[in-house]
Image 1 (cartoon, rainbow, N blue to C red):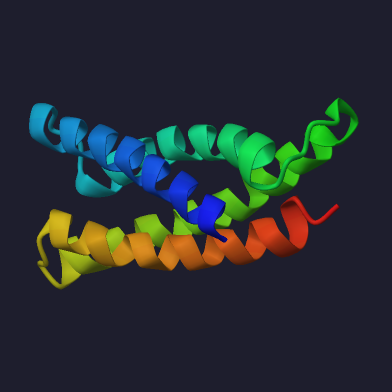
Image 2 (cartoon, rainbow, N blue to C red):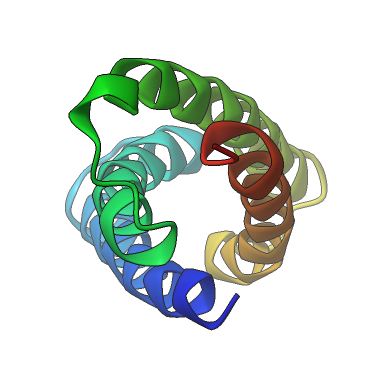
Length: 121
């Protein structure tokens, strides 16, 4: 769990950095910036979690793991993007405040999915 949390910190920094750059330098809506930031963090997450957190070095299982990893993250990204839209567009909450709450939601979804389905072998 400690390694997963450390990887999560790095992923969060990648995600938040990409999100912040897009929100501040483009006219993209906040939910599109959320998707881009999340995708960047997701790529980093697969590499670091596979090798360091769950110590999966065998190349034979990577395709199945990648597909399951993508499925968990597609669900998590959809949930986080919908939440971002709801908080910012409907409830008019700051994108950055919304982002903070959404990080907790995605962390819970991802840990459960990775631990019990993606890297369970």
